[in-house]
Image (tube, rainbow, N blue to C red; front, side, top):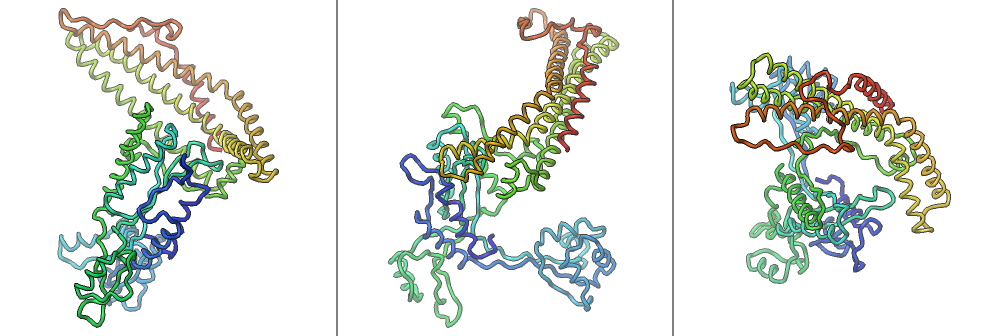
Length: 537
């Protein structure tokens, strides 16, 4: 729902602005709509939607303080108690029911759910039939305009990208929902791969009325004074038949069912992923979109706050901003949490492999011998997991300390390229500043890379040693396969090892010849901690 008048038409103008919309090979804008191709006519359409859509009403709450005086007394002094609730609890008539507006019934219920002794209204009624603590009255929401922003693959050409937009738009066309979709090309203010589209829509099917519609209304007994062909059907408002008061909207169509359901967003994500993946496959591109949420994929990510134009410009100049710094901290925490999750999974997988090994070897060997082998397998797998974890943190620590300078260099390179492409763009001072920042960032990154030589070497060492330990573990497990193979079975030969690609490995069960990792581990841990400290500064 859009609260302020004029926001819906303004957003249509914003996404359709000339400098942002991609231009197709035939010179036309990459824009699709079933409302009207004329920008001003679409703006008028959205203004009419705002004017005729049901006006939203506020959420409300009702209670009687004396029904639960002790509970409400504690709530009123809670530091997080919403102001509207605190004011209502201070009423001079605690024995009378009071009903008051609240900004959000959902937020109020979330607050009360955390208060000791709170009983949800439905629970109170079902379990004991007693008077509920409070009642909630969610207001009507006058939905005006929904908005979708979608990524478009950089690997495809403009025609293929716009085909994705066209096919995705068909979802709304089939449901006869008014919409406008535009494809935006990247510019010098954002990443050169930032191809995307905006789609805004209204969930009530609409059409323009005809002479036949007007005649039918008149035949049904409605007054048709002032009606003209070409009007939108939802704007047709007439007196009710046989009444001196009241108004009717006889040809206004019902909203499409299911648009406000949680499954609708999931449906849109799945449809866009399927369409995009089809075109990626046709183009021979291996990358695929996954429509699932990060949490469903096991990816830990904290939503970041939008920088805005002024703060984004400051970050491009290499200046720290409050939002940018907070976003970096969120991202770093998410990366570290992801590393923790990967390490836990590696250890769990290792234990599963060890248990499988135990079960198979106990058929032919004594418990003591099997446990010795299982312990060696555990040492290899756990140490490899530890080295992988250290490598993960060293790698991301290095990337973190380079990230700000890398961003400044990349963003200002784009600005320099834009200035070169259009000499009239920007002031001479802006051009000089961007060139200076590219040079400064490049020099800083070169100095930083020199100082990170040891850390990069340790990263290579950790990955190499982890790979050797995993290979050692695999060779131990192959003994199990050979030992339990049925008579006459053929065991696949181990592929020949290329000396230039793989280091020579020790004998499978000779623990004294296992790769030496303790010193490398200590050095890598120190590097990871140093990189993490640098990233946190």
